[in-house]
Image (cartoon, rainbow, N blue to C red; front, side):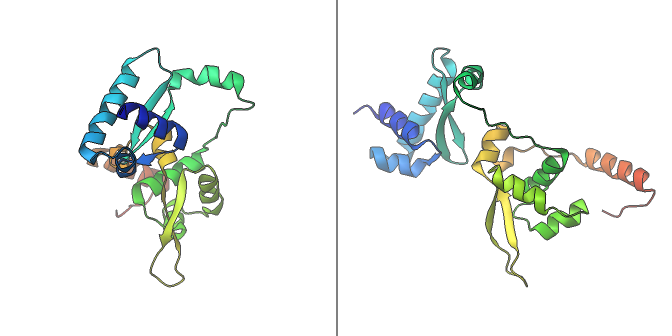
Length: 187
């Protein structure tokens, strides 16, 4: 059996990410062998300029997608490319969710200092953020976190790959904020 062809068919047909275990079950191989085949396919797709597709890994799941350089051809055939606009407010809110997840709207609003209802709703609409459940606290507020679409959009395999601020950068931001507010921040 051509396992690589089977994996390609699965990923193409599903159209969304598929967990390693599900792929392994479908082709009736163990996860280690399946992962090896997936790694080979990823390498083959990336190294070939004759293939307009890629296979990407997203937090232990795999998805087939088009290569970024194919976008110009896709927009010619698509009626209207989906172009999301992430305003400063949305980016700020998304950053808080990405780094603090799981997080409630109240926690987001405490950090931002203003209502975040619209921003969170828009991020959910864009499928960059999702409800993860409810906090076991009075009122049982919703918890929010990032989605696979977030990982895809920002080119990372997991949230562990997000950039980390150094203590020096944190101190610089703190000093800038103190100067702007003319107060001493105790963080």
